[in-house]
Length: 414
Image 1 (spheres, one colour):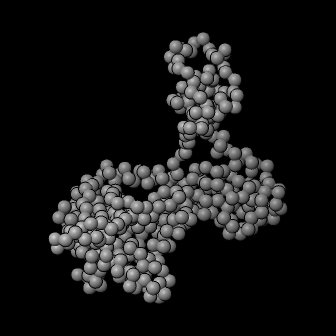
Image 2 (cartoon, rainbow, N blue to C red):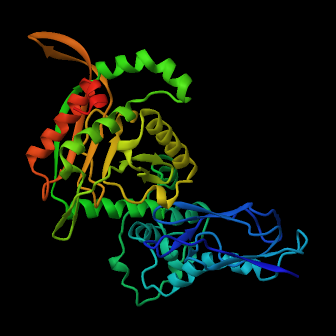
Image 3 (cartoon, one colour):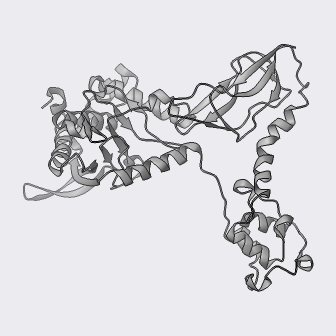
């Protein structure tokens, strides 16, 4: 029997551990070389673990949901084995992560969530009569309702005399049908990515002096240019011209005029970046991610559109790499794709500013004393007031507005 070990891939220096998602193969099943066995989620990306050799998945050492570190052994492949001949230890190993929370819960004095404790008392049930599915094996409200619906017997007769029953809520139990049918609840743990996003957003709000400045942009010139060159552009580059390439170009245009918008804070120092790495906020099934357009000032409209399309596809498939989301000197968040009219974006640390763009809608505006209809977009730029004064922020946003209302400025960099 020739055994090949399957290990966790090398993680980024800033990532200490990762979470196993779902095994795509069971112990005893045949696997092909480079076939994806499982995905591992870090707080930044989802990594695929391919089979290092062909054979049979002899043993699963770390099961679904397990926390692992770089280079940790997670499974073994028998290159000479036959499908169906799983190692006896495979099943217990896979089940270990599930049993662990339950064991941990047994050592806790209070294993029922508050809402669950109330329902347990109302239905004269003991905690031990209900299987907990919450964190660390805690009994949740849904667990109790499911137990009641399943006919679990009351334990009122065996309540120890030492329990202060007068402290239990003396109210009528709610209808199981009402709770399950009309007011359902579901408790789902945050993914590592979602938890990391939450942590960074809170960090941003607690460490930055965030202010937001607004302006409006007449998008008619951009729309006319797109309409004029769309067909030729698509034939030449194989991708359509979108608004985002204009926003990126306009942002770089403004950052060159006001370098502090492209800077970051490091302790008591201001770090001015001599390059323009623009983060593009992208929604994904697992949460918000911000891949980076490296050296955006050197990219053409076609380069930007192709890269953004690539980022969007990778985000949906969970295949963005760490190197694609590391760094960044300025970010752009486009809530307009979802219909947002206005927002106050949160800075992506350690950056010091972020541009929020929104839906372009026809609105009544005044031009030369006349009310006219124009396709308007509201821009919002949040900035760290510790290093960016209102003057630079406002003038920076005005520079973006002017570039969008007269795109020829972008060609001549004026």
